View (cartoon, one colour):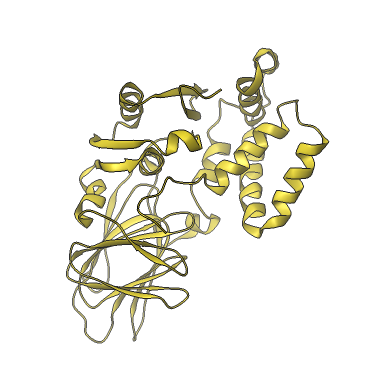
Length: 319
């Protein structure tokens, strides 16, 4: 895990690309065979594909695509036609399908505490500790005699843990856990890694494979199930969402977009080339469309908005 490497496409992004390809009207036997091989290569590929398929089915159920919209989609050339076709299939007038797959694991809907699109909320826990959840976040709270456990299922949180020497405060993610007796912690769950920061007092990170790292106040790391890597800069800047701000200090555009996603309905698709562009600035999270427009004015990118539910970002040289 290197220094803020360009974000690779998420599995959902790849699954959406496959959906576009297979419904473009141009897919051949070789494309379908490559799609089958991709599905068979990893159970996570099959899960991502199932989530995208489910999203499309839920959107199609209440609304039949308008015939004129279908004809217009077929008249569009190349990739634009393919995107239009998928949106026609999904029913651009309904949000249900796209929102069904963009909000993380299905278990997030049943979590003890959760927030919706654009919603930040603070919760008081039984021991006096507090959780501030970012938009689109979900947690389960399991306090027992040996520890105070918070399971982060999706999104991000800032936990202010009250002292309790007998019961450490633990935030668990898919890749490991962050533990402290008393601290202010930032934890963010991404698709294949976790971001953790010690905002006040030290904390301990432990990956699922047993790799440990002590965080001093102000430090942040990102980790997967086996490895831990430093995140340059103060941890406090990564928690700026708590004040409604997105602070980009030489961040890849892909990561900037990841932080915007919980603040708008619909899906944002970023090409690999565009995702690697670097961003500097501070932006208001409550105005995600204005942020995207601002980025398009300062970076060599173009935005293509389809029906309000899909925004495709690519570099100006891409087709």
